[in-house]
Image 1 (cartoon, rainbow, N blue to C red):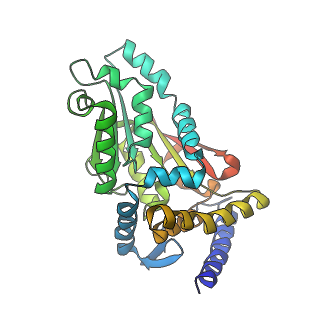
Image 2 (cartoon, rainbow, N blue to C red; image 1 turned 180 degrees about the vertical axis):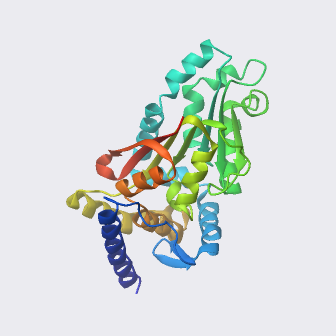
Image 3 (cartoon, rainbow, N blue to C red; image 1 turned 135 degrees about the horizontal axis):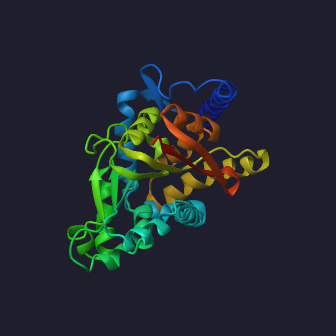
Length: 309
């Protein structure tokens, strides 16, 4: 029964993506959420139920999430994240700011609960060393996640890794619970950079999340998204799909005793926008100079754009 269900949904995804791809050449893609239902993996659910179900998934996997990422990707996720942070050019920005303390750099990392991207920014900007001095750091990374358990793990890791001063004194890193669709905690034009890595596909309404990202960015601010995407090569795609649907849920069951959460993570990738569609969605949200680059044959892609000056 499960195999038949997967086949039906995969067929439906192929049809929907084909329609979106053909229409996006001349018009914007259809709204990400239509009607009173949306997708939770290959399952249709009420819109108001998805957020809670996604929250439950990440509460279940929070403690083993980083280990599972290593096992699922063979460590590739670390290389993808390293490249993502390098591509952000934060290192060069940090050097300028350290020489001119009157400037500052504020980064918002959304859906970054366990701190993987934020810690890379902290290390790149040498915030740990700066935390040994008094006063607030001119460079700050705010980690925002809807899931309190992921944030708990992230803050614990930050204190274990850097000590308390970086959170309590220099405030170079902070953890805030929030929803990507409604970042009410943050004022308009607050951040120089907004990053989200492997989190956008789990948002109920991607269009709302992109609009909120645009709102909280300063004029000229940069948006960067690292996310699983669509593999254009049919042979690589076949291998990737076979591995994803067969190996990843099995690994989740063996390592985390949780097959269903990792089945959802695999299915959510196939339901998400492809590269061109996400590019159009970002443009519709008001971002400019939008572009994307594929990594590992399109298994993941980095999308970036800027808020109008």
